[in-house]
Image 1 (cartoon, rainbow over the protein chains, first blue to last red):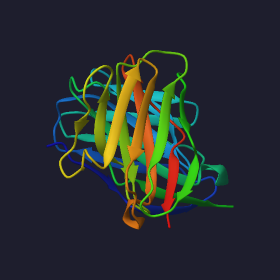
Image 2: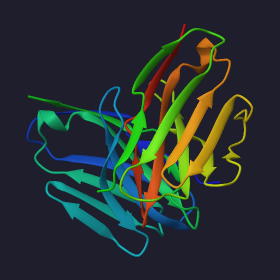
Image 3: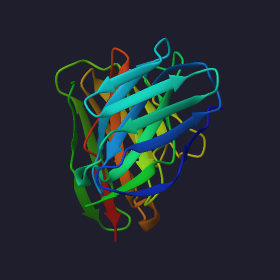
Length: 113
Length: 113
């Protein structure tokens, strides 16, 4: 059974600092891995999707890497801003399960002005 | 990106009543949709897989008679919480996949009083 873990559970940084969020998964046979942002009481906003054949994806200040062999993905957010404060979730798409996702516990990020 | 619409966003109901939540894929067809539940300060847990034209598949520990799922068309899945109790109060969110990416609805905050 796929298990996804995110460390740390919470992170507080001053504005401008780079953020590094970690995600690990137990079964390397994933179809893809997605990173999401969730604001309090809200739904999920998809940030980046990394296919199993890819090693990284970039969008603006966001960069996500994927290392299937070690079961890890890392989300980097450059030059953090207070608006980046949210919970970040990673989710592994189990192979051939049709977008059936297993979520990590999330990392709650606070960027202080 | 693709749009998944969920309604209502918030609902308060009395204990013992039933509540229906709708999940629609607005600009694509989805033969499979997924329903997740999120308790406060916890991550998303998959409840069931909704299959168009056939019975839903429930995850272990989820009562199929309590959480009725209907996927009558390629763009609509509904989740009905029957005989709701306060412990059913939670954030319910649906997703649908297009190509290799999962898209989420806005979520429904259910409060049972």
